[in-house]
Length: 499
Ligand code: NAD
Image (tube, rainbow, N blue to C red; front, top):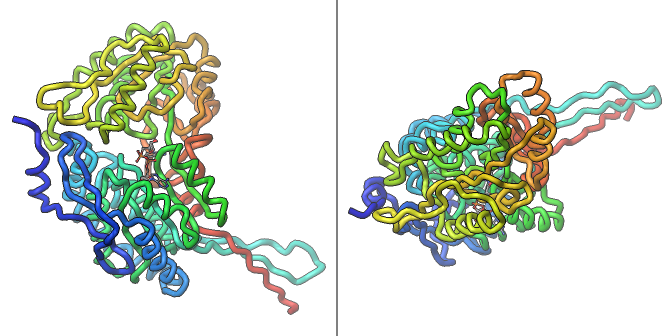
């Protein structure tokens, strides 16, 4: 029997989506678009394309709430007291949120429920940011000279109206990172999820809509590139917090110059996983790197090390265990506990990934396995068999461009400096990891790799530590205090005690 996600959708009572603007759920008359499930290409439901009119309305509501409403001026304790029931509401809905996220992007349910992109993780992230409300402090400065009786102090004030634009792959965590930090900082927000993944975010929006947030503080709109562009370029927006591709990030960066919007850009990556001869287990490293490219979100994670930079002496063993790892991959119903890999988000992205596989072959890399699509009951969905390339040179297209799919490229090295040089020879600089048991080497290489973060014998982001990239991987950091800084402006107040 052909795979269908309709029973899961019907069980969850999924309805056509609405917009939440200025404290009201509204229908927008600008047209609608279908949200399609990537495992089957069935329509799950439809959402409103907010378009310019919807964006205008949402920004006006957020502007009014920021300029005239109480939220930016509330005492810290009051702000935190309003956020606390939202956190409780997210924890209470964690199961349903996980199911909706699986209906959004096809992430296997057991990952959606338990991993660091789960509903529980979203609540943890919100909880972390709510804790900042009463710790957003400025500084006082010592008297500078005896010529005057001027005293200087600084305050951190909310940056204003923030636009939060999300990618499709981890909507729950991404929402919490942006909206949690913006609200804790006293900003008002307009959030727009990816057109491919609206369901879980709409459920979160319902939790915020039923909270005591004043009208206009939180607004939820849906739509594709046109709506995203209208939001990112709107003159009423003070700050854009964007997660997505480098191509769109570049457009946002260019457009922001017009009114000097603040921008935080969390973009793509082409991170390196470096396997040294003194790694504790070559099998472990091979399974980790191939596993990240083939299970969970099937390589559709920004921080995935999609270049395995492997010491030449380990190549045969690495390829063997990468092959063994791929034998554990199971496609199918994402709600089935046996399924451990996600479909590719859209047919367009499938074509793009297959194009990269072709380019790898054309440019002289050797495809060990995968890179084709399965048939049978999976033929209706966007599945790609995980691919491993060897004989890859770092100047090949598959080593330079972000593929965002299940393709791992193995690049050999002989000396440590060569491994570092290959890792750093990239337009991107998001994450990466190192496999070694030599602590001195681990520290040396971690410091030498040019990226926003590096893992030593393992990697995972966390709500309380900074995450972000350099070069085309973006600007700014999310996580912990760095995110609060990004949603606040520093104001200096000068007090003349002789005045
Ligand atoms: P995308 O750039 O296609 O879309 C991201 C969002 O931008 C969507 O909401 C989309 O509707 C909107 N958008 C599209 N065109 C726009 C425009 N011109 N102006 C404003 N908004 C616009 O990215 P995607 O396919 O959803 O996500 C995959 C990308 O996101 C990958 O490159 C991945 O590496 C990156 N990503 C980065 C991080 C990180 O933390 N660095 C995390 C997750 C994903």
